[in-house]
Length: 396
Image (tube, rainbow, N blue to C red):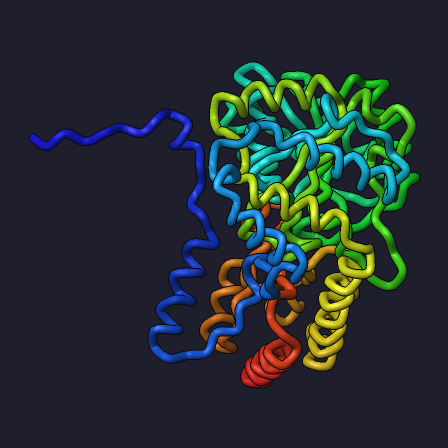
């Protein structure tokens, strides 16, 4: 009888990866010679900004840069992050105790969950949500309690109050993510002021995912939660180089804010990794030195794509509203196709229009009835995708 390794019990709670099913279908179609236009994963299609790449190449020539690095990030990089927060948000950070480098924000969020929660703990996650906010806590052994996402502070706080009343285990922390993935909802500083005040009162720690901080449109600028006086007492914030600087594959991000939480994250990371490759860290310093015009140009590209997509979908008979931030559009399934759930509708678009979108259900039960479209195709292909959808709609 052949021996078969048995998975850990935690593996039984992880659901089927919906994106894997659609990506397999996309791959099969492309192997058949069909030109699938991919609005699925939020994977930037442009290369990293040129000065960043040049700096990386230079540092690669230094043999000492190929050795193990520092797990929490080299000092110069942590100082650069602190400087970035001071110049962009007027926030003072101690680079020694309130800044840590992570291998992308997803890794940091996952390891922070291991550091802060476990069996017998509970966390709050607004839904729909980026999957790692839920599943990192689940993998850590905590119970996840969801409530409806809102960018109105009073509504958001009312939902948390109601959820706390019903919670069997009192939640220890709450996740925030604005500009939001997948819904693209945005907030102003007043939202954070009210939520910080409420969470301080309720002794709820805040984990703010600020991945899309620079991807904003129409004059809107996303605030940092750390701009709220005293927020560092109850919050950390994650930022990433992936979207603002087209450095997705480089895997570099940061956790900043509450020194105790940052220290705990550093402690657990010490058991998992030896830090980021030094040339990547030095290239990130170069990125953070760039003038704001560079990240504004990246945002402008996504804004132009948003306009082409939303205007085109409206003409095609798919009602859509323009978002103020993030590199996604969150779209309700048109009423005439409301008999389909989000996965079935996504498969129908893929087969019939050769357009890949993400089903809303992949982001939790509250995402049902919606799909997410990432702005990662160039303008010409976006126009073609809209034409394909319009043609499919006419067929019924």
